[in-house]
Image 1 (cartoon, helix red, strand yellow):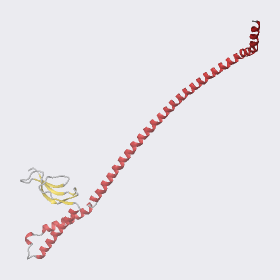
Image 2 (tube, one colour):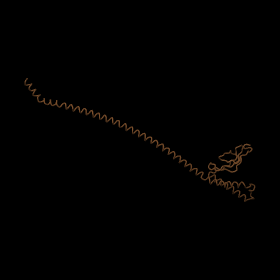
Image 3 (cartoon, helix red, strand yellow):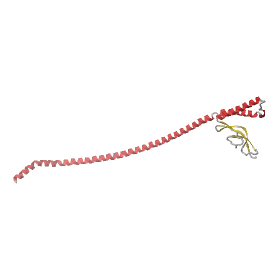
Image 4 (cartoon, helix red, strand yellow):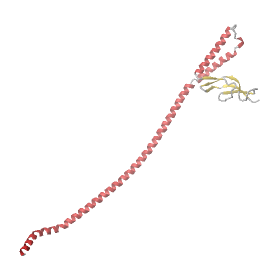
Length: 222
């Protein structure tokens, strides 16, 4: 037994210094572990704070982007409206210009036509002034003159019609102040008041527009 005890003490004696060293170094190990734990917690807190800041920053950026987007959308809407109005104005100007060009083509000759109307009036009066009873074969000169006047009058009316100029002979029609000019009003038996009883001068229209009103006498109540 004594030998066994001695052997046990011999076996434990070399390990005692190591155990004492371990005990002496354990506080340092505990301190280091505590520091590592604190450091880990600090890192986690820093990471959490960074994540929170990152979460806050994008929300602020998103707000700025949303505001900028709203401004750009408003500007785009304003520009689109202006563009549409400009297109509408340009189309209106184009249509008006086209209408003016067409009217210029149609009515550009009206001043020239007015001058020719005087010639037509003279021809008409000349043919009316020739006594019909004198137009005979035994009076060939007068007959030829009359036929020439009639042919000239017919030809000039064809030219007028070709260019849209039409005669207005409103005998028996209702008086229209836009197409007729009343020279006098007189009662006429058997005719309705307001109708045209006499045409002193033939009127003309150019493409449906009154170029010269007819000079007329209008029936009135007796």
